[in-house]
Image 1 (tube, rainbow, N blue to C red):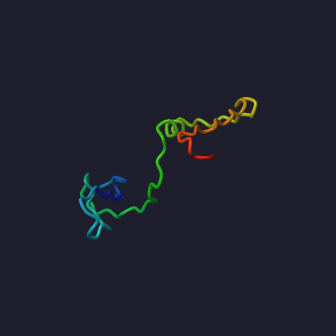
Image 2: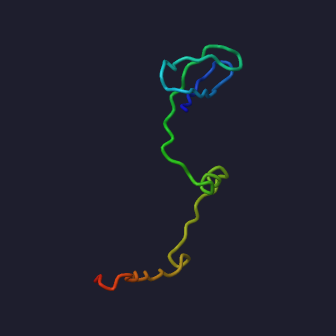
Image 3: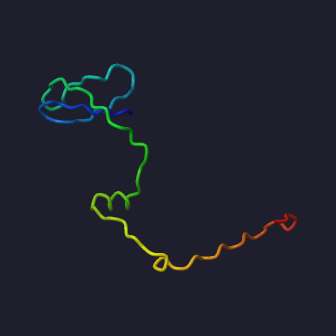
Length: 89
């Protein structure tokens, strides 16, 4: 279901949802005052953030800078077990 954002001169921005993308969606009537409104073109949302990251951004928290010593030693990589004895590797 496509959504389009429009801007009314009196009421501000509002979003309308349509069943199809066909037709001209350049103008729409404002749902509050009924005035003809023009479409606002916004950049598409090409990514989504996790809830934790988005809440940190909204709260204005900055990422912490850590040193290697604070992160701790690297964990050695475990060797993969061979499930098939006839495979070499």
